[in-house]
Length: 403
Image (cartoon, rainbow, N blue to C red; front, side, top):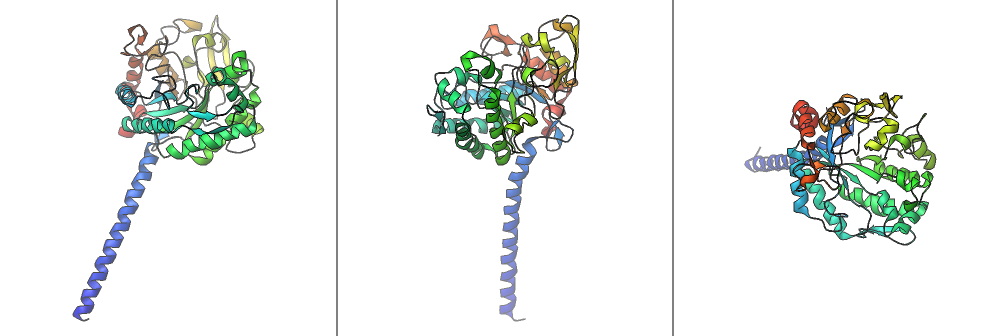
């Protein structure tokens, strides 16, 4: 081989080595992003538990529903949320539930008099972009609540009632709000789940919210759930106020978010929830017992006088968390429960098969308590003792990717 040919061959070899190395680096970098997304995303494992990167995670959670009512597209304060997420992580909290739209009095979601949704404000999207990046920074998983019964008694109540009672208007919400939300944030694994509505029970039961039929409410859930599943890996739930409308069988009014019911309203295999997230306050215990001290599943036994045992009646095909309960803990000595506190509430919920607890609230938005210190001394509670107890005893379940 001539000197020139050897030189040409050497140049070719160097070129292909460079190309190969470059392609390999592109592959590694691209894969790294995918691996990180996969590693950090919460999913449901074959044993009906939440998991991250092959390891179980238990939702040692809380609610931080708002700093200022209707923050996102309103008076959003990124520094406050940065500080709050840091405080949550330090307390052993791995997830929080945030109302990303409280009742839309800030007009963040653009809805007309006929209930047709055409989009959301630029500030709403910008504020959420900041929020989800802060969640990633502090490794706090967000359950994003996108509507509440509050919408249906707000200054725009007639628009929201028109939206949910019209299939075409409900579809406009999906097309112009839910899907754009996912397109913007679906690749951020810290958008763990979407809660389609806070306590829809009151939309159905209360005159001030319109007494909307369940068929309309649950159709809205069905089409949103299908769209979320079709466009992302984000999990879906609904925060029902009590098991009354979240379970079938004697003593319940029927599960209005069951797979069967949702698909009867919208024939799509992806029209389903991924997990249950009922709420509990002590007024519920008289009829259904204190859930932290019961299984989520199985038949409820006993009565309020002798004490309850068994389960809360939920369908065992899905994981269940307590999406709200008082940060002050369950009432002392209620319905056969003794020596209970917020600390025992968390641990007994875990031992009884609940996949997480999310008390109301970290920042003491009302008299149900908060994670001390909140700057509201009359509302401070020992919520942090409960979350830190779980972190101390079960660290591999709370922050599994570091254990």
